[in-house]
Amino acid sequence: MNTFFDQSPYEIKLEWGIRGAREAAKREEILIIVDVLSFSSTVIAALENEAVIYPFPPPINEKAKKYADQLGAELVVGRAEAIETGKHSLSPNSFTADDCGKSYVLCSLNGAACVEVAKKVPALLLGSLRNAQAVAEAALEMKKKIGKPITIIACGERWEKASADENELRPAIEDYLGAGAIISSLNGSLSPEVFVCKQAYQGSKHELSNLIRKCGSGRELAERGFAKDVDFCLQLNSSTIVPALSGNKFISFEPSNSLTLF
Image 1 (cartoon, rainbow, N blue to C red):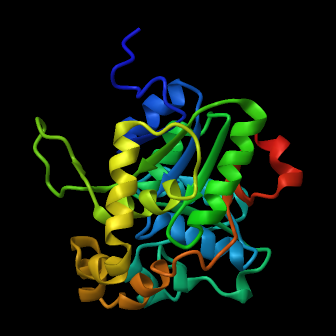
Image 2 (image 1 turned 180 degrees about the vertical axis):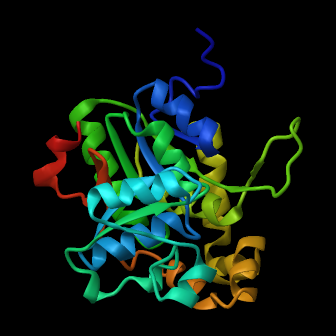
């Protein structure tokens, strides 16, 4: 078996996008999926308000609507549609205390797509800047219990109108820096890929907010009227909520419930 690209024999690894998530899932590793703007951050916001989130692969279509109907849940819509209808969207600020106990189906091109291909791993967590330290601590606890490496998946974005012979993945610095923030609270042997990511974060953290606001993804959201979403997602270590996939929904990780994830 070729082990060059699976970053063996390191305990902490880093991969990009859907393919990276799929490869880590084949190895049955502990996954932390990082989609800062904003799948990971939005699920954290929903769980902070005690909502129930069911991830579903993109696109938002009739199949997704049927799934939501089966669950008695609301299908989360695109930001533009949410403005017109008042429904929830990938905007983390669309979730409030009024959502306590309510169920939602959440699609996204990157975060939810990565969850879909990796949902059978021993443990799958969502990480962001908001919960970087908390998700690292949860992953280390799981690693101690089941003895598996930890792989951080920086989701990235997708190029629009990619040709058939092109890779759709567009690396995104917000996810790379979010991964670096998480890595900074992990211990264990680091692959070279992880080491460089950690150094990128540590060398940039004094300019973190400015960099992400001015990067492609941050500017796109701001120009569409969602600058407050970017501000929300930039709140480093402001949350102790760690979304953990349990069956077909995310629950808030607690040491007492960790055995239900394996």
